[in-house]
Image 1 (tube, helix red, strand yellow):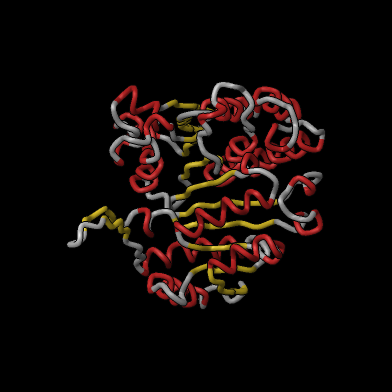
Image 2 (image 1 turned 135 degrees about the vertical axis):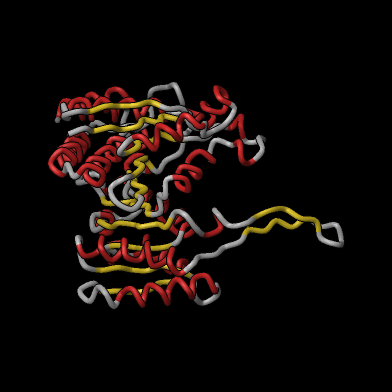
Length: 349
């Protein structure tokens, strides 16, 4: 079968980590593998005058999945907002209908002492955060205005329609059915009308999934529980803003943001896969970035977009074996460089 994948390396350490993930994909000798490169972020802005040029969007629509590196560059912070590197990923989510962000978090054996939690707490972490990607304040109207008394006021509109909530709720319930059968919906329904609608719709959808245990939690309590008793969670479903924050918090509960992969899925099997870390321009070009999150993102790509469970599991096992052998980057207290880690994972395939 054809395995047509776009590779958008992006900025900073993006090209370094995606390069190792590509090596892993190529080592699997997948039938019909075709990799198509495209420019995004600051690299695209410098070359084409826009962070998501038309040719990159055209590539996106011609492939079955996207492997994404990272975007962001300090030198672009003063550009108009629509030209900043981060608009590349936001626009891809909107243009391609990527509404469901899957962010798994679990502690690899032997890394318990490297997390921010007590080892006996950390080793119980095996959860999946599902974040809605197309709504909330990230896509609402926003601006800065001047009040009558001359003061400046920034404003952002948070909103969800019931069909947006219903769609992500179904994703959460289906994921829970394939895991431990527990779904925790995180909101702030005690103060936000947006969250009250969210909770109401999730409860309505729950009637279709009688075998899934549904619970609700306010986001401030969820943040506390993630560090107090993370083992209680199986699947968490939440909105765009809350999911962004909680999934980054979960990364430190497992030892490093350099270990967390993610998938952004549309209806069907199309998806964009990326590490949850940023472009880290301060260490770009030094060959010290941990590529494991991107390699694990490639495993998610094979599983969710192509149904290649065996190959995905092989990648995950190779990463686990590499960590168990003590081959770790600086983010995990080791000294292995980007290429060395990639070599180790490829060897263990």
